[in-house]
Amino acid sequence: MAFGSTSRATIELGDVTPHNLQQLKRLNQVVFPVSYNDKFYKDILEAGELAKLAYYNDIVVGAVCCRIDVLDGSRRLYIMTLGCLAPYRKRGIGAKMLQHVLNFVEKDGDFHSIFLHVQVNNQSAIDFYKKFGFEIVETKEQYYKRIEPADAHVLMKLLRPQKNLNESEN
Image (cartoon, rainbow, N blue to C red; front, side, top):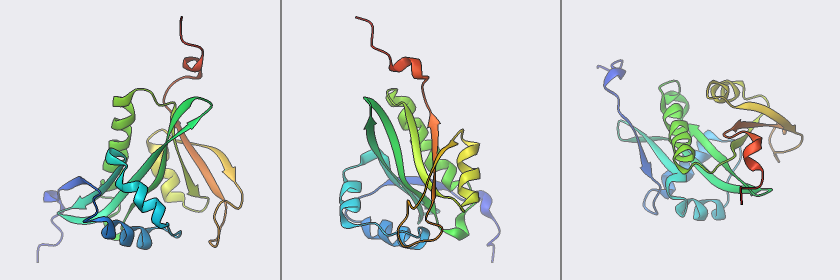
């Protein structure tokens, strides 16, 4: 049994479609302590490049789902979920998903920042995002319902300096 040979593993990202939406639902149920409603999944089907399943040797092991928010006229990318099944962590799958998101905003060129919420006790997630230049910018008390701890850190990665938000030259 050559189980230890991870060097040949392939990690690929694929689209979320009506045919594999159930796999995304199951994955999220296992990975996250919160549950997502039908509207979340309906919106995901429209998300295009902002929602991807991660395959490890053709097995769905992770997913990333984002949406575009606008605040004070600035476009911000919100990472709603980014997760990977526990046995497949530390294999570059989360990094591949986050890199996809970073490439998307860089190619677009018109995003102010990327942000997400992380449960305050999820130190491995906080460390993961910090490696990619995210910082804790705020802590929201009682952010989560029915899970403990209920508080969430807001992590953000600033993509362009604030001065770019000034009026465009006329």
